[in-house]
Amino acid sequence: MPESVLREVQDEMLCLPGAGASLLEISHRDKLFVEILHDAENTLRSLLGVSDDYGVLFMQGGATLQFSAIAANLLRGTGKRAEYLLTGSWGKKAISEAKKEGEAVAIYDAKETNYDRLPGASDYTVSDDAAYLYYCSNETIQGVQFQNEPECPASVPLVSDASSDFLCRPLPVDKYGLLYACAQKNAGPAGVTVVVMRKDLIEKADPSIPGYLYYKNHLDNDSEWNTPPTFAIYVLGKVARWLRDDIGGLAEMEKINREKSSSLYKIIDESGGFYRGHANVECRSLMNVTFNLPSDELTAKFISEAGANRLAALKGHRSVGGIRASIYNAMPREGVDALGQFMADFLSRNG
Ligand code: PLP
Image 1 (cartoon, rainbow, N blue to C red):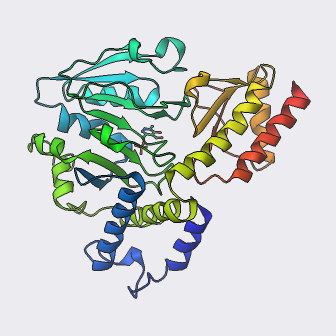
Image 2 (image 1 turned 90 degrees about the vertical axis):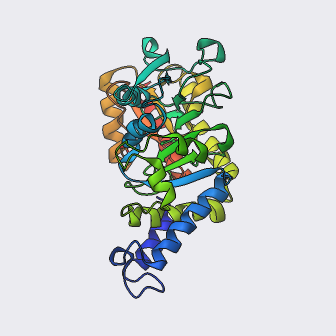
Image 3 (image 1 turned 120 degrees about the vertical axis):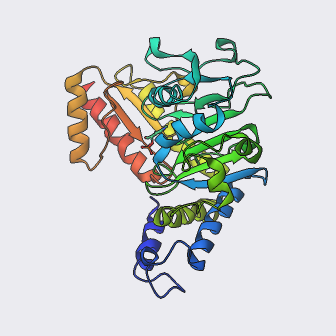
């Protein structure tokens, strides 16, 4: 979380300006909270350039609920099949939930190379009448990130799980039928998930699906069909303002993210094979830098010594092993530099 946002939240925690009470004490129907919700939506819309053809929804249930919601709204009862590009762990989880709602097939799956790469346009074919094409723009565990949207016929809605790279760079929203992101990486605290969705697709869903999953309920009620996660939305609005006003927008954020991530990839590339990046070079993530060391012993030593240097949360997921440095938007340049220095020093002592 950006430090300035944390400080603002701290200042306003006891008494929200204008409210005479804490945000945690006022109703979600209170005019002040409704203004906060609208402001968060409008700031996101301006940051991303979202047109009126799209709804912006604030939902609960994390990104995981969207695995089901997407298939319930866009697949169930259509007689069509949904097509998935599987490039890592989260895409696999998403397809397994979609299969409960209808026919969902993987038209690309990088499992044979342990999800170290992304498909080129010639590696898969999307059916013209698919219910949608689903992909995950940044696979958090493997550290592989699409540089551009995958090829998709105009007749097929493109759906993206943007949970771990939302707001890290500009996004051509009009290429998407739907994109969503849990907030807890780049956009705010856990508890709210942003769904950006073409309104005409919302209208097509079957109203008999469970009410919370039915996007139209959230759209028609301004994300207040039931009680929304008020605190998370309030902080998300502040993070969006920080991005717009302090950072200067998403193009500027991307520049910073490129500088931060490339400083670590440079150390990996120049380590003479001591550090081995998991993701192929052309699809390396701006957010999750994944790499392995020559042995499990050295990996354990790296993590332990890094911890002693106040560099935390570096252990890679067990399916990839090694190290994962998550350097989301709020990670300051100094934090990345400290890790880079530690990596260089560790290499000189153990390489
Ligand atoms: N999708 C991606 C890309 C993620 O990184 C995560 C969590 O890390 C999820 C989905 C699941 O999110 P949640 O825990 O909010 O359901």
